Amino acid sequence: MERFGHDFRDPRLLELALTHASTHASADNERLEFLGDAALTLIVSEELFARPSQLTEGAMTELRSTVVSRRTLARAARELGLDADARTGAGMRGRTPPISVLANLYEAVLGAIYLDGGYGSARAFALRTLATPLAGTERGVEDSNPKQRLQHWAQAQRSQLPRYELVGTRGSAHARAFLVRARIGTAAFPSAWGRTRKEAERWAAHEALLEIESAGNASSVP
Image (tube, rainbow, N blue to C red; front, top):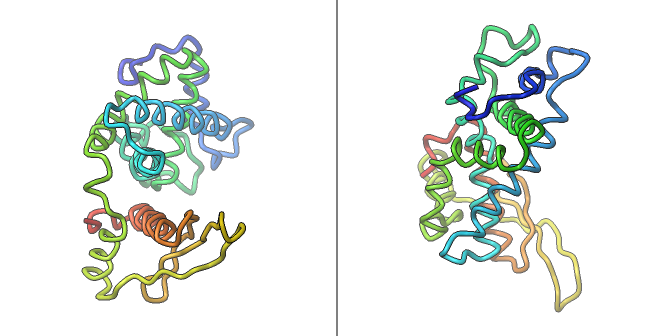
């Protein structure tokens, strides 16, 4: 189809990619979603690695997680019209699919394109449909201090400051890793590992921002 930039040799793959598990059909898009997720991780990683700015491993990981986040993929799915094409169960009909379902549809379509046309076709699809978020990574991580962003959000939306709790450690004294989670009031966010406590706090803030955005508060995140 023209909007996908790919002419399916096997249209059944696209039909399967658009069939959500809520239909309880004999076959759904979950396996294609799994494949698409793996392909997307490689495509975006390869693209970031090729950037002339020589981003560090940590920077590439952070930028990749933003590009492949549920929120970003859901937006791409809506732009492709997958929300209208999706085959969903009776409980979801007549309403806009949630962000998680839209993101899964995008990954499933990518997986279908990969099976139908190979890695080159899948890569072309991903780079075209995610061009805007990928272009945003050109700034690197200098404009994205997750602890600072989370603090601004917490002060503006909750009139509180984030707290960082040490959840656990592992390893020897010379090779220790730290597990930290962010809290805002009584709300606890997913924890994250770091090689130092400061690094773990940074990743914990990043995890908190992703959850806030996925919950529909993206417009208020700085």
